[in-house]
Amino acid sequence: MNKIKKTAALAAVFLYSLSTLCANVSAAESKWEIENTLDLSECTQGDTLLLTIAAKADSASGSQEIGSISGVLEYDTSLFAVEQKDILPAEQDAVEACSFQASDGTFAVSYKEDVKIKDGSQLLQIRLHTAQDATAGKTTVCVTSLKWSGSDEKNNQEIEHHVPARITIHAAQEAAGDVNGDGKIDLADARMAMQYYNGTQDLDEKQQKSADVNGDGKVSLTDVKLLMQYYNGEIDGF
Image (cartoon, rainbow, N blue to C red; front, side, top):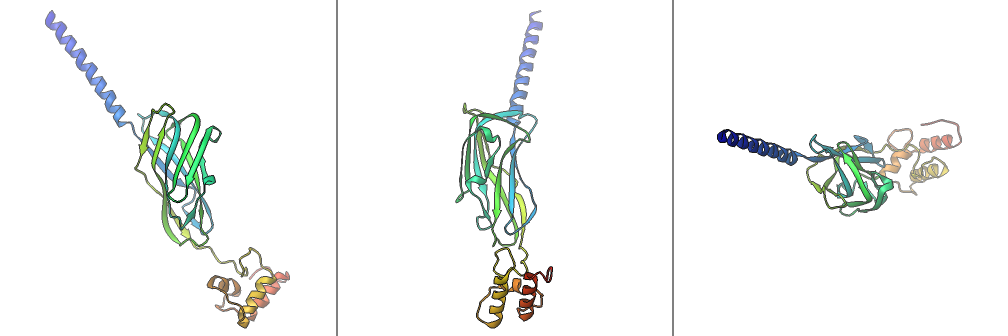
């Protein structure tokens, strides 16, 4: 009888240990990641992009409450401009403070009280302003070294691994006729084209392309005439 009791006790201990081990394994496997997503896959010089950073979790991670979040925005400062006002944390009404350093891309957000996140929760968005003279081609942007914690210093997470968001930048098309680049076509543009034709005004390559409204590869009196006709309303375009 005692032997049976001992066997049952050992079995109970074994089952308890096994369940505890499984629980610990599940906790260890609980994992959070982040996802970087841009609202565009292609843009032109001067465009503004929106990068969304979302939390990704496995089924074991459930949800967490966080009181602060920080990280690093990795981006090419020669291609994009970002300011503190471009950092847009989720749960705006609960935000206590938000900071951003454009020089190294570091940002930090603190909340008045903990906010709940779960799989798919948007953590923050960041506006990126593509430079007017940005080099055309492919590049990436991403948030890394992301950290968050609750107000009680629990639920601490540090996420290093990431998959960057990819973007292709295209050169902006030259605005035909807008020689001085002020967004309109008027007498000032015709005057600049005329002065360039007469040799009294220098135009850079971009301005020459804008002044060459008939597209024959040179700036001539024909272009000046077309500019005047457009300004006077005699033609609708070039």
